[in-house]
Length: 470
Image 1 (cartoon, one colour):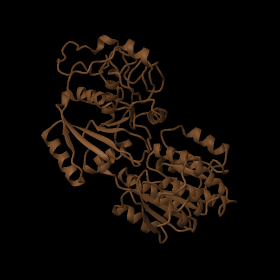
Image 2 (cartoon, rainbow, N blue to C red):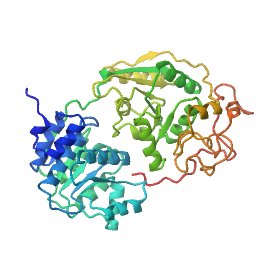
Image 3 (cartoon, rainbow, N blue to C red):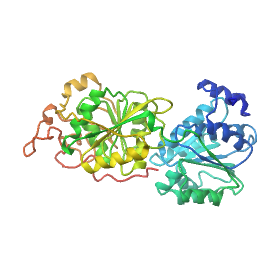
């Protein structure tokens, strides 16, 4: 079978030059199939996961049509809907890289960011490509600051996740606000009934394309579990990280509170860790992603926000600090490693016989057994503050700071953090080395990991107001 090259896909020289600058000569299977259909004006349903090249598939097609068929149209011409703000930023960045030699660029529009800044961007220049989360897109429609009357292309990305997060009704409202004659693309990793109904209601005789290689390659991921008592999890995790020499690891927690807390603990044990979850400000989330992707942070402690839709390369290992709720989430988590022909490791800390049995059953169904390895629960010592400050200069924005430890969701490193106090890592000032010793009334087991409670006795995020995250 003859291989297809990008030069055979009827793309403008400016786009081919941008693709070549990224080091690509051959399209992925979904790009090869989807781009010609879109250029012919056909509606497309693509079943594909992150990492298959779907963003470039619709991005290149949109840029080509803006340069030819829609050359003289003004205002918003193409709208891409994504479930999370991280994905909105990521999609817009990729489209802008592909369109670097054209007159068009994409504007990401999402909640958790000052809307006035977005309004200034919209007034300052003409954006014909909008990449938006549903909630913020509806906000702009109600304000009349973005109009969809001129939309020619509507893309719904990660449709199944839109469904999981409860955004399908918002997506329907946005589709109805666009002209009925517009072309539409829908991408989804799975095709649940509600997603199928969405395509039947709003798409015109769409072509269905399933990307090859869209499943997680479990054979490329070495899976292990560690049996450990719950009170010894921190020590077991720290010793595992050191023993395996994990230089780029993604650690999953069940809750936002737990992710913050674990990031703080790991900081004090001498690891460069950042937290990623929905209670952080957008600047903190962007900063965490940048530091981790660029290798300036060794570990990312995340909730399942990061298990799908984020394209993070070269993750050496995934660690389930907390067991995920089901096999599907487990698969999505471990799929962040062992990508693009590389191999990776996945570790899970199991704290009961029931969790061990559950992991074994998942491994059997996946056709890739999860191997038991012994836990090293030797006490992990905290690094003294003086050593930390010498090795890693303080920085703003949620990373190590002399005034406060761990990842903060709002005013990073300030004395006025939520429920701020001088004691513990949740307050304004960072505790000195003595604070790692057990206080009166604490047990001696794992009590060398302080509970991070200052005079106010509360968590950093306790009582924090949930913001418009999407």
